[in-house]
Amino acid sequence: MAKSELREYIEALIISVILAGLIIAFVAQSFLVEGSSMEPSLHHGQRLLVEKVSYRFSEPKRGEVVVFRYPGDLRRKFIKRVIGRPGDEITIKSGFLYVNGLRLEEDYIDGPTYGTYSAPTFGPVLVPEGHYFMLGDNRRN
Picture 1 (cartoon, rainbow, N blue to C red):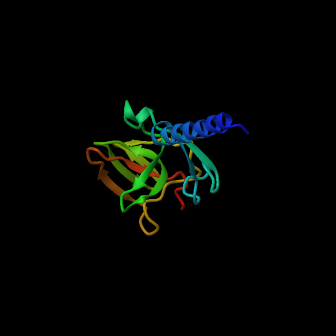
Picture 2 (cartoon, one colour; picture 1 turned 135 degrees about the vertical axis):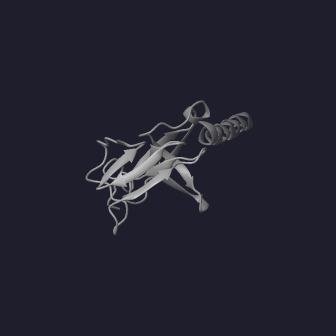
Picture 3 (tube, rainbow, N blue to C red; picture 1 turned 120 degrees about the horizontal axis):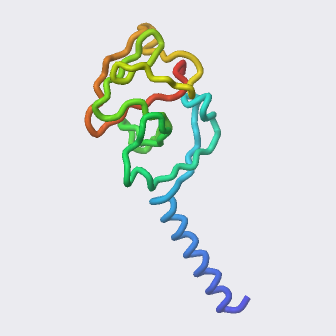
């Protein structure tokens, strides 16, 4: 291999690494689904490709699946579904989820939603400004 060919190879490799870093930082990133909290929609071991551009221009919408940092440990990332947006009131009664007093139709879950194991009711909880209420699709988990 001539010196100029080696140099071109190294330059191409460096440019590829820089482009990959920029894509991961600003455009898209792959995440591994860990656990069963998003079943039946997503299963343990699946890969999820997350596009990062949309939320620079708009807020997450109810029903969208998002990846976010766990507030208690910013190194951990969770994959959950947006249920409540800022200002929404969330309640779970008798296995059904209510947002602002209206029952939320969730065709992506399998079975009822439970507030806690010991109580059939959760809330009402008001979602603070700048926050979102997230749940996994596997409400029995």
